[in-house]
Amino acid sequence: MSKFVAKRIQNLKPSATLTLSARVKALSAAGEKIVDLSLGEPDFNTPDYICEAAIAAIKAGNNKYTPVGGTLELKNAIISKLKRENNLSYTPTQIIASAGAKQALFNLFLAILNPGDEVIIPAPFWVSYPEMITIAEATPILVKTNPTNHFKITAEELEKAITPKSKLLILNSPSNPTGNIYNKKELQALATVLLKYPNVLIVTDDIYEHIYWGSEPFCNIVMTCPELSDRTIVINGVSKAYAMTGWRLGYAAGPAEIINNMTTLQSQSTSNPCSITQAAATAALTGDQSFVTKMKQEFKRRYDYLFQALSSLPGFEIKPCHGAFYIFPNIEQAIKQLPNINNDVEFAELLIKEAKVAILPGSAFGYPGYVRFSYATTIDNLQQAVKQIAQVLGKK
Image 1 (cartoon, helix red, strand yellow):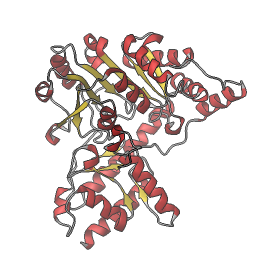
Image 2 (image 1 turned 180 degrees about the vertical axis):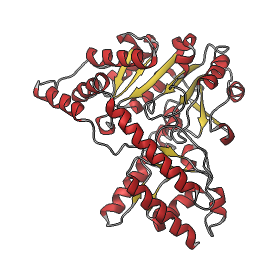
Image 3 (image 1 turned 60 degrees about the vertical axis):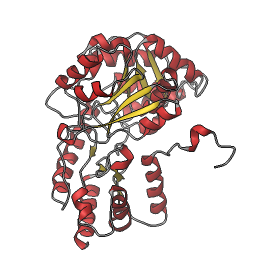
Image 4 (image 1 turned 90 degrees about the horizontal axis):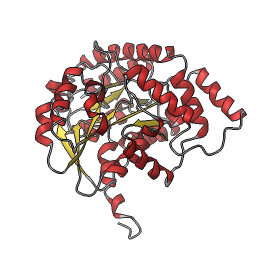
């Protein structure tokens, strides 16, 4: 290792999703026809009214620095959204806008974590959580959840994981990579445990909130238990709901002291998020929401197809889910049927090489023996992918 590399970087893993995305682009540039089911990015165009708001902001000359944590217009739009859709009340001092929900999380971890602090992360988990926590010099505590409970941490598992060093619990619902969501009863059980441990903060990562079709209304832990509001940070953004991944706008809502410290940190790193993006995000949150409903309906249609299609493949075992745009099948039996394939990483490598289909191994999400399929692509692509996978599995 070079003497010029900082210790905090030496064991840091690059993002598995972005690494594979770069590989797929390189293969495509070399003439390979890869069906990419790896990246969590809506394939829809950003709605016109949002783009028009950005163009109007450019023409109006809104290209200067804004307040570090976002314009008052954007903060008020976020506040209105949280009140309207989640019945949560915040003031502008309790809101920060960042360059994506990822930066909001990064800011949060650096602002609250100290060396020796422990962060409880139910596994499987979004790939960046443990790496961000490691950068903040805290310790990720990975709690492997049970597939029979749809990969959700139980109250008993949570209480067992809490120690005097516990500083934070991360909840992500709907989940990346499983697509599962915590219902109100499950959240109430978790809240009952957390109320006994006042030094444990909670972050609820709600970025997939609107891509959800369960029988119960969406609910996060602070909606379920308002008593936890003084130590819960809500993370959300516009990337998934409004097909705005490249615009880079996420936000956090929580206790003013924590948000203020996140803002101070942001002032010394990126400063404000893009001024034009802020205008677009304000329009997204305050404008016509019919696009969100239509996109959700299309994702549900794709889910229905892919769930049935993958369930018919030999060695695939899949549990139903109700949100995000991912399916997370167990492929252990499929691996056993394949010569020279020993794990989910090798299985994913087989698919990209021979089936020309890119997916992610469950090991990247802390859950070996599984793989993640993204259906943020067309039905035609999904059908082609299943056909090509079936052909490869049939040859082995």
